[in-house]
Image (cartoon, rainbow, N blue to C red; front, side):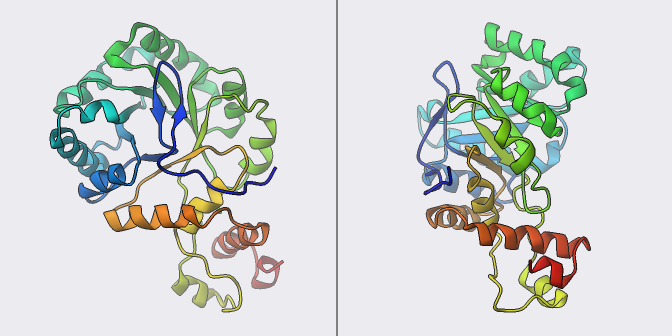
Length: 285
């Protein structure tokens, strides 16, 4: 059924063992103050890399460090996910401990994330994360996976192999609408979060250069968040607002509610036009 409203950032989804997360997860940011702004907006879920892309998460680590110092007990109000990318299971231990050591006040990882996984390596990497959750290694109470292979998502979610799944769905890559979400079998399944939300967004200057008429709906970049969450079956977003102002734009965009089918088509068609996969005439269809 079509959605009537989008998730409220202050609401919570339950993963397991008492882990309750906002439907918005904040990843790499540019301004450390973005972390506090997100927390003040009701967002309690943050993701940090343990290895690959380490420099890109410097501002997020600094923001979390400041938040964790801000008042006693705040650590229990936030959920921190650590993502680990090596495919060899033997290297899926130390990175989590190194992240804890590098971020004073973190103390534990709440959610361990299998990073950048494909169907070819997912099942080989999964047992070590199940063991992490069972033994509470580095404090983990839940596990997730960031899928780069959409075909692997529905089986993993439907069989409860992870407590949360991240997948890619955006105007430039809309395939999950047909090859993932219709295959999800239960309303009580683990939640699915999107990533790379804004890929395929076409700026106003680029739209003008492409000759897009002004009487066509002119989307803002934050409408890509509405695009992702307008799909029945999408439960949340992993996103990287650069500044506190962008956090506020995200919250305001979600309050506007789901996109219409026509608006969804506009975003997809603009992405195809920008990529040279459509002409102006076909993109308008």
